Figure (cartoon, rainbow, N blue to C red):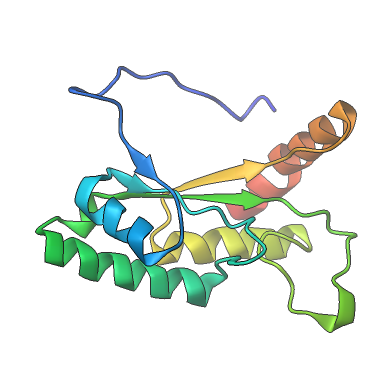
Length: 149
């Protein structure tokens, strides 16, 4: 974890950046009107936001920004992604979930979401046990992150 860092920066005036979550049309309208960023959560089983779905939502958000007189390019797109256990198989031959699979597949997912316009990825390493969460973080820092660089 030596290569991972957290940096504190000064608060932007007049307030910290406001990231708005949600996948619905009203949520995207709120982002276009009031937000400094959009923070979709890719872990939502109802709307997992695979690349094509995220692209469609970003296109809609761009249209809402134009209608609100806002510059879409000033928004931060911060995507929360669960980091799935590579050994967990999906039932019934379902398509691989983003951010699951081999380190190379996860690295490719990172690049794919970056190409779509995601500038911040927030990975969820939670587990029922602290040791497993720490193991997931270590694996990400030493195997996946280098593969994505």
